[in-house]
Image (tube, rainbow over all chains, first blue to last red; front, side, top):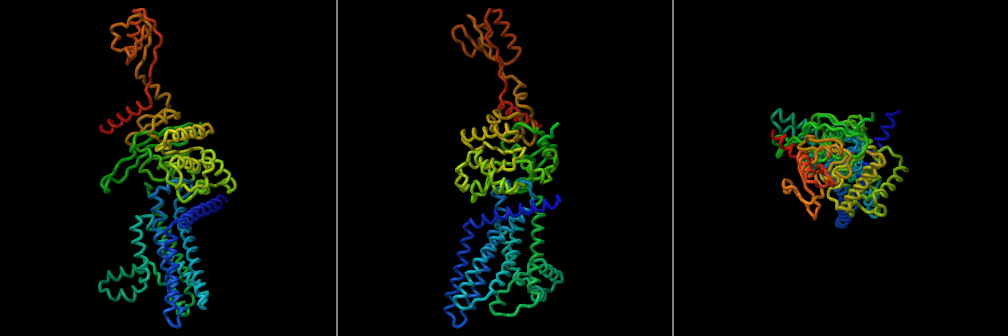
Amino acid sequence: MTNKIDWLFFIKQITSISKNTYKESIRSKIFYILMAFAVLILGFAVILSFLTIGSQKRIILDLGLAGISFFSVMTSIFVGIGLIYVEIEKKTIYNVLSKPMPRSLFIIGRYFGMMAVLGTNLLAMLLILTVLLAIFKGFTLMVFYAGFFIYMELAVITAIAIFFSSVASPVLSAICTLAFYLIGHTSSTFPEILVPLLHNQFEKKVAIALFHLLPDLSMLNVCNLITYEIPIAQGFTIRAIIYTFSYVLVLLVAACLIFRKRDLV
Amino acid sequence: MKEAAISIRNLKKSFKGHLSIGRIEALRGVDLNVPSSGIYGFIGPNGAGKTTTLKIITGLIFPDEGEVKIFGKPNSEFTARSNIGFLPESPYFYDYLTGEELVFFFGSLFKIPKKELKERTVSLLELVGLKGKEKLPLRKYSKGMLQRVGLAQALISDPELLILDEPMSGLDPIGRREIRDLILKLKKEGKTIFFSSHILADAEMICDEVGIIVKGKIVERGKLETLLGKEVRFWDISFRGAQVPLELSQKTVVSHEDLTMIRVDSEEEVETALLLLQSNKSKILSVIPHKASLEEIFLSSVEEGKNDKQN
């Protein structure tokens, strides 16, 4: 009984931290600046579609999804890297962690709050894209399927950002998270392309280890499949969900373990 | 016997030195017992280890050695913090929140039903004198208002123990008085207040007990009245007489017509002076001992602390 009550209390505490994180992001300027850029890209996609013949829908869909994905990832990185570090730097964390709450709940709460912000952001942009597509007679619900995969990618990127934010400064966190993002989109090529090019057995082993360690973000990219209406393999979605969940879980557990014993000076 | 509000045993803490070279000892074996009633002043000069101690108590940093108990519970258990309210030094709050949102947010981290939390938020903001300002974002608050909203959030769980880090620093005299009055009011309500300060006048005015920390070690502790009563700095002797004895003329502070006041530095000198005055047929009006102020005790403790470290 006591355990049950404690779990409910933990959920309440996580929800409070998440709500506060949501308010913080929604009331910050950077959120609106990145959102404005994303809307601009959607407008640009429409203008560009007028310059092509016969494939207006495809241009809007392709550029629209790419723009939404890119600006969502940028929001995730540039807001995410400050989620823990800035709290320590500004000393706002002192008041929170002096309350009867395990430190790990703070990390989890910040993460979910950020995911709620990104979800709102993404949903708003997907709705704009859907309206644009409807205007140009290219309405498709597959936009939301792509959106779901973008959201999973954001879940991984945010977890990486929060992990680095709990151990490093924002600049270092930004560099590392960006590096993970870029490598994450090419890591799937390591076994087929990179490993055969290496001669040393040790280097090959390192490349294979990195392939397993770094995120495989290409697994979460379905924008091209949807734009070009390529059929999606059975089990693809389930595999992507399990991969995202596992990767996020490992990163959050690692962040919590590091943060658990960190001196907040 | 009631459990001590805070009990600290042999607390040690060191930090990495500049450029990670060597280590700086911030606490060198602090022992402290804060009783579960009244106001306890934790005083010391800047860099003495006050904030480090408070951060360890509230679980923000971890000691190298030693133990801290809050009402008998080790502070390593997060539940030990359910009965404390903490106000950090120069508190930094989420400036995008309003005063009301901030207090409500911190309250939501405790086991308080939502309806009750709303009511408490309103009454606490009123208690700290922020009624009418609760809808303003914190970025528009003055330093004094931030300190008061900080106190409100520290009180939201109705804790038995309040830990305040330099609650009066950076405030103007009116702000300091308001916070002082509020602390005294909370004491009357039965709360234990443990606060750090380097403003001795404030500490002297409201503390029941003090602990003086210098260079990471407690150098003096006890009830304020006992500490202040320990030593008499000088005695003022007033008498009425036509002539001041020659031996006492050097000690004269004030002399008007046949009234004179002399100041002597030791009990032996008092006795000598009294004998001289009696033989001179002077009428002794008063002998007033002047005890040390907290500032003097503090300064001599700091000096002793320095010598102790050098030795």
